[in-house]
Length: 601
Image: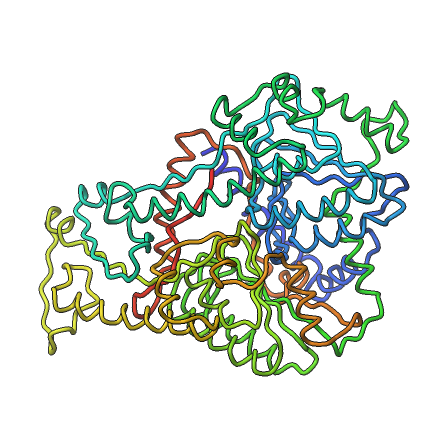
């Protein structure tokens, strides 16, 4: 309640402040202030002998987030940076004479990154290390996601009271069937694909054998990639790391030293002292000479804007991130109509010579997926379309990807899940138990098929199943055509089964193992652009100034990521499971989606 009042008051204050500015200086004065703020040369500066700081608590997204008025006014805000900003910054820093090293700063809770994005960042860190500029990595408690990045460092340090977690990955699914049954909520399902497990939380009280089989397979692939990648950097065998996971799981600082997981045990002030020596900082200064990777990226972006390139030769990077929904969709969703329009405009823009379609989605509406997929086909007829799969590109996410000229995925990308389902819920029992009943008058047998007042009849279920079957057939046939695979082979590897990127390449579902930068280079090559081209990102990001002009009172106050207590964290998971239902708006009620809120712990 304390936080609620705090952030509500902050939001209210921001609104009143915005209105006060308008009434005090007038609209023209407001515009003047915005222009002045935008033109003021007050950006970050790089001092000689600086260290770049990458805070591992930062949220890393595919596309650049819109700056919000609420975040500008709030002291506590979520720190977010785009993947490409980090990759470009590390590439520039490698040869920047003002940068002498890199510091990976651990956190009690790692930000939202995703394993595929971490793979790409890790490769960029390895490339930076080849410049002979040292990488330091320090944390109180090294968790596996942080250690996956930190293990690339020249020197890994841990607090004397800290440790390193190497205990394996786990997937824990929440099943709601018992609760729905208890409260009297009826659930009926139509689906195709024995591995299509997205509906299981509503039907079962534990994993089906098929779901367990596929989860063990792809999770094992991602774990193997972790073991091999970390092991190579630390000169340890995968079997040695597996033994740690099976024997102890978490090692204290001295144990981690003996196991060669870290290089040194130190307090934070001792790490600062080392970095002061590296940067030549006076010992009396509070800290070492540094610049955050976010600020360093901004400087690089400003320089790029002033670089002379051929604006008539552009590669468009189009980001599709979130659940796929019918219609326009919200800011964290992929609206079928909105994404189709983006593709249409890029297709008609003669200066755009190739499109890199960055997909990071668990899927969603089958109808919206087909709308987007059709636009990919039409765009490919005029210019190359290269798909770069992020952390997730499965079900509907695969549907919108499959028609590209070439598909790139990381080995730990989650993809496949070629299957379809329909989820039909009714409130008859819970309503009747509370004295609510319905009656109906209709002019046709199926006129009230969309009602939630009763279960579907066998005839209605058969009709819905027929639609699901037809959509699944359409899905698999399109995969066969686009991927040039025999239909019988697609039917074998489909069935709603989830695959890792590494296995998907072996199966022919993706073409190359690689990240966003690899996809961009492939697009330049396929479009025969040479080295003289410009990169543009879509959808276009609105600046803070544009948002103020559009809607002065549109304030959103955000809280920074926090580590929740176990009970609150479990309740949050329950909320997230139910929240997914809001995104299920397919007009036919048919979905191509991964299991709900897939998490790797």
